[in-house]
Amino acid sequence: MELDKHIWNLAENLRGGIPDSDYAELFSLGGLLSYLSIDSRYEEIVNIQKLLRAEANAHNELMQILQKIENQIPYFKDVFNEMNVVKQLGSTQITRFFYEINSINFDDTEKVSEWLDQALKLIAAESGKYGGESATPDSINKLAMAILNPMEGSLYDGVAGYGGGLLEAQRNAWKQSKSLKLYGQEINPSTWAISKIRLFISGDEENQLLKGDVLNHPGFVEKNELKKFDFVYMDAPFSMKINNYDSLVNDQYNRFFYGMPSRSNGDYAFLSHALASLNEDGKAVVVTTVGALFRGGAEGKIRNNIIMSDMIEAVISLPSGLYNTTGIPVNLIVFNKNKSESRKNKILFIQASELFTEKGRTKRVLSDKVIQKITDTFQNGKEISEFSTFVHYSDLVDGNLNVNRYVFQNEVEVEGFGSVSFNMETLENVHTIPLKDIATLFRGFNVGSKNKENSDGKFRIVRLSDVQNGKIMMNTLSRYHIENNAKINMYELQEDDVILSIRGNSLKAAVVPEDDEDLLLSQNFIGIRCNNRLNPDYLKVYLESPLGQYLLTNKMSGTAIPTLSKKDIETLEIPLPSIEEQKHMMELYKAKEVYVEKETVRLEEELMEMKIQTYMKMGIKDVFSLKQ
Image (cartoon, rainbow, N blue to C red):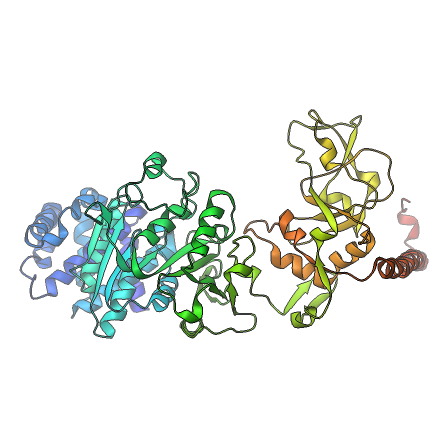
């Protein structure tokens, strides 16, 4: 805590003098000069006392020190030229800052490294300037390195940021007296400079950290081919649009043999680069968003090709809120080009999205205990109820790698039923059939802005708000004038069609009543037209049941708004007794439903009458009147 307070005092003294975005640079410089001044190999290069005595000439003195460092330690070539703060800092600020630094009295170089690590963490937590895409949370770095376990050989990070992952791996290797060679590339010049300093202060002066765009200009190339590494770790910018896309289309390094990534989303461009950088026995961990696990199109093709290559060893779902600058949940995909026989043709899915520890009001972290649990589960291939399971690649649903699809909670909250426990093993004893075999499914109509609501419009459209308590509120339907209705019959509803909402956490179902007017389904629904083996009312009751809701919810994808696809619903398993049994069940059910509805109305009227009588006794009834 004392160290934190000292760091905050330093930052407060700089307030307004330099941009917040330059704090990380300045603290890195402070750490470097402190480190060199107490390292016997370099102490003659840096004389902090002389810098303090320079006072009004402190800026020139600092520039001379940095030039001397670059001249005598080739490792720092061009590093200081990439730091904005070097050009902006005035002599008064320099003197004040280094007076505070000097008061710490570092007595060994390891403490300097700890100080800089803590300073960068605090800057990240406070402003996010050091955060953003460059700062992977420490707990994710710890988990990734525990999974990879790179003790010897080479480790590469193509989007190194401030070097947190590389540093975590190196420290783990040193604890075991192992030798690990670090390689990295970083596109942001300032970030690259800070990372170089941070790794040097930690004691790794042999690392190879290059500056540049890893997609368009990969730095590690040997004989016109990408250099291969034993281990790769990457946490690339999420869903970034790719610049200079044409250069990737004609990629000379053949990185995209699994498929060409999307121009608008770079997730699979970075992932493909990571895989192309692995040697024949290599292992990798890539951090990615949930969307990258299930999106279709070009990404879906790439994902399916990678699945068929049998390199994916595990997918680990992590909590939301781990990053300083975004609340989205992330996942780790673990790749292994040399999987053991026991793990071939299958993937271990681990559900850790709720295993976080609150740190302050907004910060979440993975505790050491959680990291150990995930690591132990991965390393030992454990299958734990509600936490982890192996899935054969042939059982993956359309190449969907979303952990929620395969690891289920046995007890969940279901609207209208409260907390419900499930025993999915017993479902195996029930005769079921995929919905697509007993019904035809169709999508809803995308109304769009060009189709205006019009009281004289020909078509009425069923929207989400029009379905209440399992029924379509026919009297509330809005009419629309549809400009281009050439294919409008694709969306027309018929009597006894079942409609199911497909967006959001609350799924609605209803059966279309008898109606002779033009009725269309909106894009927020899927329409289901039952064949002669399936009763519509039976299907609706099943969809609304705890089991139906549970199975559908587990199929949903999406982070902002969970969504069901048409294919998700087509593959839903339906218990299927004979059509006669279904009809008999529904006759009894609907008769009881009508009775309950009538009784509910009668009891509500009785309660209202009692309230009115009570108000009369109070003497307040004449003060207000109720509109019928």
